[in-house]
Length: 382
Image 1 (tube, rainbow, N blue to C red):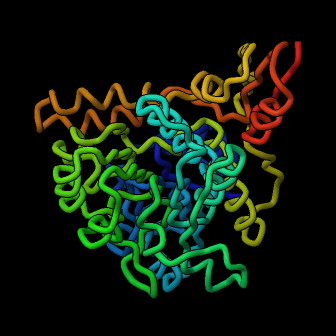
Image 2: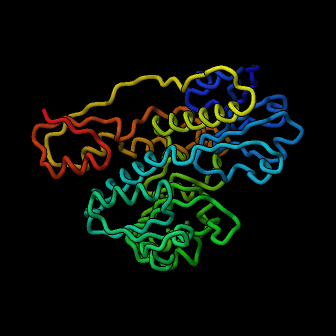
């Protein structure tokens, strides 16, 4: 195999260690990727901050593009098809990570506002990789859900999906749709004035999909008119230059890190590695390159001797640890906010998913133990 020239976003986990098996890897800041940087490269590996389109790729030597993300609104897939450039994404790689973010956030709100999740109705808009996992978590906890996904509804004969209007009176609404500006069901500014005016005045609204799914000016006006509404926002329009006024109105605000678990990032790298390997097997790959070499880490162990699912989730992932750093954004000069927002993502600490957590206990009911296992935890009885 002739050595490939590979340009990769430095935020792709184990990018150099993994893809150097195919050739020379240049790690770069994803926001700095431009035509000059990639014009002589063979492979381009990006995350969501890089716009991949004709402007970037025209007259380049790029033969393969991979995105270590589930969403692909930053990729001009039509141009790639017309240019016969193979493309791979990491669909579903971080779905569990995002679902755990939602669960952690809802547990925090339930505790602070003094209600039980099982007493609320959760409306899930978008029931693909992430939304379906959120639904599973809610099922484990006995929470009633209403589901809206017009695309899946067209493909299924089941009557489990409702119209968007039937979601409006849910106590909690969580968004898990891809960003789309065309097609039969566009999601760009799906949450707008008309949408918001139909919601309960004390609704809990979660957005961990894409910032542009929400009309932020309309959301800000809604929050100002309905102070009892609760906003949980992980994604924003115009990242990294986000709306400080909206930030200050959010109960939980984070810098687009819901899907940033170590495990999700690793899955994304493994998926791109497999896709590139498969592509090259049909081209010039003549030798075995193996698989992604994971940096091994032991499962994290903690002890709980009471029937407390909230405690288990919080010890595993308390989203407030991510939200605290965002509170400083409003105190930073406007010219430095974008860099600070990006720094929170670049320097994000290792977060393991529930499936890499072991709960040791000697005094837990079988019912709670089963629920924790259904959420993904391993439970060992001492």
